[in-house]
Figure 1 (cartoon, rainbow, N blue to C red):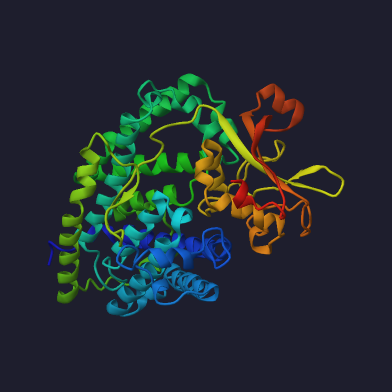
Figure 2: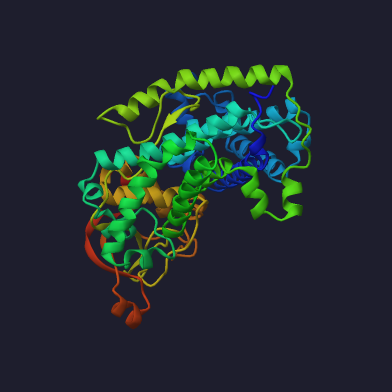
Length: 481
């Protein structure tokens, strides 16, 4: 079956699957650590409430069968364990049917989390992980040859990811068209990284070159993925390097890392052999038995046909003037549409949560990732996803993004709830209850080179006003809101 086999993709497939397992592992661990406080029975948006109003057909999930906080953790840690087995290559050495079953279970477990995760799991990279996770079911194990159709579907995901992101920019904010968006983006992006300050202070002509290069990478280069080697490999390399540039410039969970893996899968084995030492290469591909069982061939062909049918709505969305930025058109999230930063904020506001101590002083709670203390330099968290920090960025854009969970978060702080405090980096009250809490708005900007040398701080901030006036347990936050 020469038509079915992609002989050039043994290493590309292995790198993709091992990397995907690593992303799954991070995603499940993040869900286990943050999920109970966000969507647990006493979470900010409880899953039991969600399940009472949303039916299985709309949001397929094992949690429709049973819900408890402990069961949620069991699902997350089970998914993490299976992901770890895939990461070390244990499942790739199992019989093909078992390998497929493992990847299918991992996908089903994570889809179950995403489909009840509500706004906390509403990001484009969640649907992307579900889509490529299901695709992994049909890529085979170490004993089967890489399926040409399967590897082509991986490239199809990469094409839609990049091309959709390029189109949404050209149709969105005018600063993408006049090449000025990077004058602002590194300063106003949701969660800057440790190098974002330096990216922001690059010369403005270089920022314009970056935007122009981004347009070429996302709107022109993706078409080269479908050309013969070495052209497709060169195009994939351009995308891979661009995505690593984005990894260095900010924290976007596993979005860029999945894009890197998708691009890596398109590199021919000859290139990987030149990059990888022999022990690593042999570990990634322990066997090349070149098996192509007929039932598996049929399964891959049928899956490719399904993707072709389901691609109709994402393609129509790409061609539409009213293009949706990130959307799933069916509850299993098998074929989705993607895009990012159709608009770019020009100024940065941040919401700070403060508690009133016994001496009448307001003390600020510290978040792990989002800007707070101006003297605290941003950290690198991606591919780990700090969900509360990201949602706080949206609240700074508009208070409506905080309903109904922000009032509940303030109540949990008033109660000194351990789960809510666990979502934060620093509790200024050491587990004690504050007398009152409030939410205040600050205007942030990066310091200049001179200010950095003087203060060693990367941020300068000025107060804007109160977003939520002081509230106490005696005066219910929900009533005030």
